[in-house]
Structure formats: structure tokens, C-alpha cells
Length: 284
Image 1: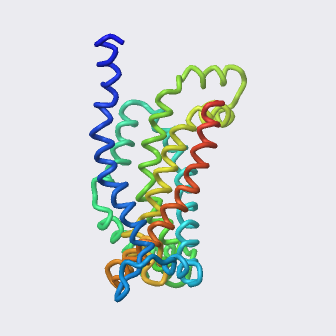
Image 2: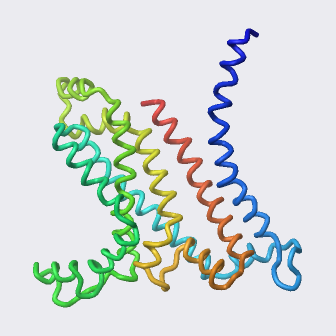
């Protein structure tokens, strides 16, 4: 092998090395530490191997309910972001230059504001006597003040607003690679607008939709601030329970076990989804 060939073979490894080192340091090392901690006892007999932390998750109905609520909310949030985000991404990608720029700025603008501030804004909107309740009363749809605070509906509304830009922006990347001539050809052949979107645009945008939905699902299932503030103590999610165990009860072993279960369950859903969507994108 010539010197140039060897140098070209080393270049990818050199480029990958910083990223792999950072990933190893920032993710895999803490994940391994949590995995080890989840199998160790604490207190007087600290350091002994045990399965009691995982047994507690299975035996205690409270934590099983928290896990089910977390995954259910994440799935609902992801589906709603897909339903709302795909049409919005199509409109932005096919709009004129000025309108497209304006819509993208409006989409990105909330990301420049702290998620805590946005969540407190939703507390004002969804709370008793808030903007939502007042508007519905003015329209005559309700006759008394309502509140969506401490409800799953309130969590879903706030989380969709927080995570929708991530799905739209990733989908725009795929839509930008679809030649407009394909849609025009389908219209010439007799397909209507919605049929063209269904049979041409949607299949070709599967990679962007898959990446965006995975990002939304991963962020929603691990979200802490918004579900904790909107849902309150009564509607705990996994991230809130882990935080409580780590900082409130100081039960690091059980908190680590909850973290490992959350990670494994998330991967068990994400990996098959990636396989299915990659095959669908390849066929498209």
C-alpha cells in the first residue's frame, strides 16, 4: 500500500477520533457508571451486588404507572408533532423566499427563549382563569373557569409547542432535496394536490420525518422541566422520579435502576423504528 493510500485510510479515523472520544467521555462512561450503581446496595452494606432496585420497579405499581405514563405521553407528543409538523414543513418548503424566511424565523424564535420561561408562560395560559379559560368563556363554549394544569392534556400541549420546531427543521432538510419537478409531473399526470403529497412528497421525506420523530421522542421521554411544572407532583414522569430519587431521597441505586430501565426501554422502541423507517425510505 502506498503512502498516499495509507494516509487517506487514516484520515477518517483522525476525523472521527475527537467526536468518539467526547461521546465516550460524555455518554458511555456515565451510562456504565449508572449501570454498575444500579446493581449495588447502599447504606451499611454498600457495594454488595443486588437486584432489589429492579425488583422494586416491578413490584411497586406507582413506578410502573409512571413508566407507562411517560411512554404514553412521549408517543402522543411525537404523533401530534408529526401530524402538525409535516404539513407546516411542506408549506415552508414550497413558500416564496420572503414568506419562507419569515416562517422559519417564527419557528426558530421560541428556541431562543429558555424552556423554563416558555413553560411558565404555559402556566399562565393553561391555569385557572388563564388566557385559554377566558377565551373559551368569551366564545360561549364553557360557562365556568377551567384549568388544564396538572393534567396530561396540558403536558401534551406544552410539550408539542416546545418540540415541534425540531421535527419541522429536520423534515425541511428532506423536503429541500425533493425536486419540485416530481410534484409537478404528478400533477400533470392527473394527481390532485393531496394525492401528490401522499404518493410523492411523503414517501420521499421519510428520512427527515424519521430523524425528526426520533429526536422528538427522545427529548419528550427524557424531558423534566415542562412535565414537572405543568403536570405537578401528581403526574410524575420518569425523569422527575429519577431526579427525586437522586436529589430528594438520595437513593442513588434506585435512581440508577430507573435510568437504566428508561434507557433500555427507549432503545427497544427506537431501534425497531429506525429499521422500519430506513427500509421504507430505501423503497421510496
